[in-house]
Image (cartoon, rainbow, N blue to C red; front, side, top):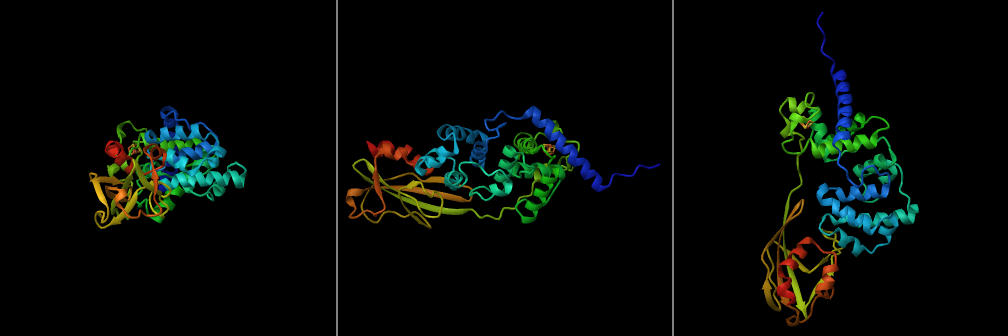
Length: 354
Ligand code: SF4
């Protein structure tokens, strides 16, 4: 008697359980020993998740250690001055994360007496906590059966199940979330979620994963169909914006004039020189120009910034803009500022302050 092939439904169920147990086994052997692993403290987990968003572990780890040392509890973070938090964050980018981190710590202290909400739906109400972070805290700290879906999870699922839906589309996000939830073994959310993320970070990496050693290679659809490099499908609709920044740097008595950026734009809350932006560089029309820096190219996720610094003798200007204040070299060192400004100061400090 001929054996009938398994139904599609049956094969998916089979793939689901095979996938989850293989991930579990792999994770037990291969997981990295990271300081936020095996912890149940929601504050520390939240801190690590916010720091690691859009950041590689190697880059985020020193920041995590600095933050835990400076602010061991949510009360310490809530009571810190914002400038101090931003200065500690300097270099990590996406400064709105730091501002939200600080603001949310204050809300947790004032509204929740320092106790983190313990469910996915309540965590989602916190500023700066999206679906991914809420799922991570709820499952890692409180063992709630909720699946996390980050870039690693999208990639692993798209490849293993051969899903060709655009992960940036509404449908893609809904379908992947549903599948991730379906794959979650009840009561094992913390282990399972961290397992898939780690598998994506170390084994099923974005470019040229070594499928020959992968424990899932016999059933991985993308591997069997030779589509690993094509998945996941990610249609990027965000246009890259080109910007020209002309910094007018006023110098007087070995002090430079800066102000805190309040505009609803990149680097809000950080200190900046007087900035003019246009379709090209804008040279000063007034005052004695002492020198002009080289051109800097600064790359952000959706922006390319070309910047030049025009250093001007402040004594030769009739009236400086009111919002600027003078700072010494030492004071500037302690201010939170964009990496672009730090680079300029590193390159030209000897010319400016000597
Ligand atoms: S076989 Fe390759 S593509 Fe498939 S899950 Fe493993 S590493 Fe990823």
